[in-house]
Picture 1 (cartoon, helix red, strand yellow):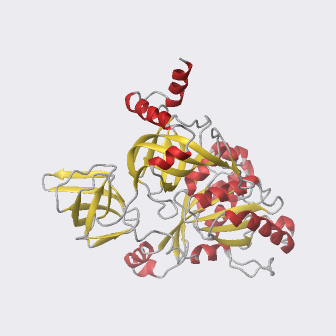
Picture 2: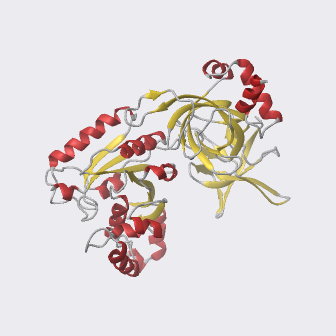
Picture 3: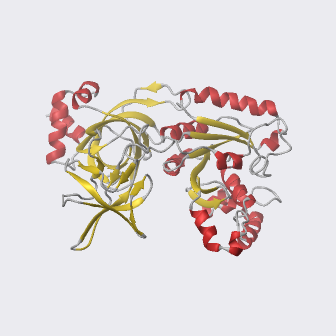
Length: 475
């Protein structure tokens, strides 16, 4: 167990009830390759006593075969489970682990540090509240450190713990710690409003991981575990704007018709007046149904089934909002885009765009600029390559509810899917909805070309509009 409680022996139901009510923190570890991310998670699991004896025995045995820590147990093997990961001593795929303490429950995403697997890091970060950015004290701030920090900030993670690892190899030198801290803060000036914590640690030996180490008497802050248990999360979620993407229409019999989904943001109560988008039809909440029965209200993060007082047409992909709320419904967006595919993005090529449960065809109509990870400078670009981050303009065939990502992470995010391979090629974060007039002015196409693009996509959806324009000009 992660902690001891007398209730386990005296009243197991009360113990489980208390455990269920604990706040959940989702966090990830990221940074450059071989900075010690998997070892840190293994140390957290080991020191919180969330490892079974047979697991520990297996890891000790595997440490002799695959380990990279000499005679010491290689705790990284607790999360690096793939054969290729153990052979190479690296993380390839995202590994999720669970543990708890007396104060909180935790879900950890161990993400890869290699540039080749940046897409996996972005996937792991998309649902997290906090990011632990590991930095090897020997090497300092690396390019991948900057890339992961920038992606974490784009994905709306407000709490960044900068864990300067392998301080034991630097004799816990305070000057080295302060130097790396200052280098990171200089880079982080343009990351927006973030809460930063800097901790000197040794993931291998456990210094400042669970308990404050005696080997860093100059460090006056909290241990990593103390930060994870006490960081304030209540202000991170949007509890004001009600958004309910419909995932499934539940019709088990003639007497029941409910709309299933997860409350993406805000709060809804029985009797509230709601509006369905994009149709604009209105009704009232008749009941809020869960497995245990009915609820009077539902809040962000809850999976529920809503029933309405009126029989109106609602299907998967529709969005329920409060009746009087002004909600952005648009076909044109300005967005940050993280490109995750080996094939380059070319403006004008058609993809599928998935917003919550809504899927619509569309194109990236223009690349405004690409972001240099090291300097954060804006660079002109005609296409996007693997791991590039850029600000783009998006032209969709259907209107979608698209809040700015800074306001609502749930309805401000989207993914792009290749129509032929069905592979996810990019992750996007909405900066702002655009009017068509502004799009035409800022995109690098004439009004005629934009109109031609729209006609081509309507009548020849499998054709690349840019390629067809070139063909017409050649003729």
